Length: 267
Ligand code: ATP
Image (cartoon, rainbow, N blue to C red; front, side, top):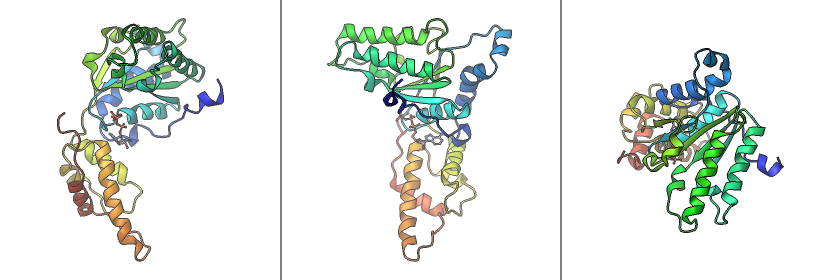
């Protein structure tokens, strides 16, 4: 593997505790992806097959990439974040080669989580990819997922799409993306946790995030980032005068909530 290829191999530092809500998703990932790596003998005792990936779907900004990264962080694994659009190449044959390289890098650097974003792109009618070459990349993807001679041991696969119903059904067979999980917009409890995580370590007087969680219905995790950003900019301006950081209060956040548009309405 050359240095260039290794540049996109990263060991994430975030863990499940850095993610608000998503309890069901965390449990499923633990049982299907993390535990088999830690306790293969137990799975064997019950005759439970190991392998296969998880496909996450749901509105943007609600933590799909974040939880994939945290999965790697939980087990101190390498992490490769691939957008399918990036590997689709207008030169016939290159997309397959790109995809194969990614799997090869992961296989040489186990344990490794590969996160495939924008899987919907495989079903798209791209003007620069004709029908038959579109099929070739799908077949290549399927055979990489299957692996030969257990060469995918220690390679953990997560994917994300906004339109799981458009996915070629071949992807859903056992050992491939055989589990599909909806990542919903954060509910009240999840938003409470997300606010607490994001405020942690910053100058703040907020001890209870219930109120701001109530007032941010339909806000995604990414929207909450934006809210906190707006509030911080305001506080910075106030703090420039005497150089002393002014603590964030609930009412600063409430004001900022009014300035940011929630993005998960239609879900
Ligand atoms: P997209 O479909 O646009 O790729 P996504 O679901 O992958 O969206 P992320 O990139 O994971 O969204 O989330 C965007 C940012 O929002 C993250 O970097 C993270 O800071 C924050 N975020 C989202 N959900 C959560 C969560 N449950 N807990 C903590 N932070 C979150």
